[in-house]
Length: 399
Image (tube, rainbow, N blue to C red; front, side):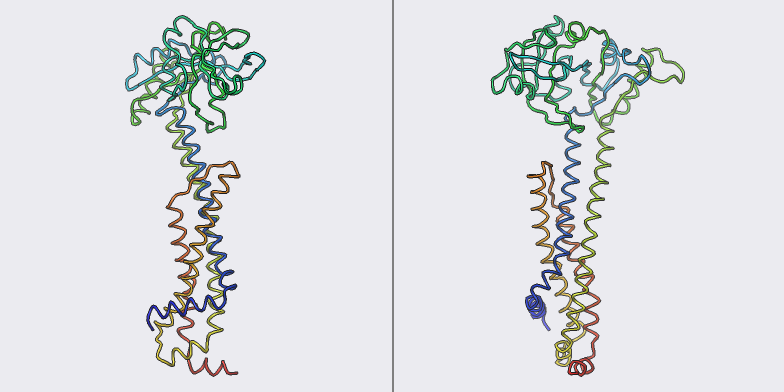
């Protein structure tokens, strides 16, 4: 029996029982579709986390006050200057302070975060000014009441009007808008990174907050492989400057965003694999359905099998015929499952307000698995069909 003839017989058998074939494929379709959809959701989570952390800046270290009492006022501008001068392999150092305020323009008001920053903040956070300009060293040294606003603040205070050159109020004091940066979107914690106002650090410290300390130091390391080294050197330097001796606890913490990203990626990868594994269970269930139907098919077609063997069909021929039948269910179900999975992912993205990422790897893997399932669960029924005794089965079929 030729391969072509076996294919024709297999497809004729499937078409002769169309409803039963569709119901048998349903498990494979749902399984493949679920794997693709769940992995796309998991990869969407991973991409969102990665993009959010990356939006904070590349190769970033952030020095924050420690948790001990009094630590919140220990970081000084001089600490940032010392890090910049004494630590190698650093591109930018940007100290910051921040607080929340109500800002007012005309009859519009908005509650937002106001950050005091230096010119280096633009490079370290990878900000791009879409309109106007950014804070300069001159603004810093003269404590100018200048402000650069995010798109969310601009939209809520000024609507569609270009806010550059407009004067608004922060805590009852007038500030002139000199620029608007391009949207950064949400952070990994869901915070709107465009709902922020940036003003010169000295202005924020002296004219707005009335403080002499800083609340964070953002540091961009030149090379990824120098992150740990620079972190250790910063910790050593600050311990010396803060006169922390012996085993006393630091009054500051240094956060490594690269390590955080690696940890978050590892967590989201495990989540993606977990979702994919749960979805893959339905593929196993679909395979059991294929074996069940193929067993029924063998029982129903004993006469046909007996006649084929009496006419000279070999064990290999019968095995091929029924194996092709079960593999065909896996192949067709796999193709339909791919369509179902991609459609589901797109619907989740469109109506669920959730980003999904569709890649070739899970599609190829789940399709290959569906074909393998069809073959694996079709072998036993095929062997049973190939081992039928034509005379015995033919006699039994007449009873």
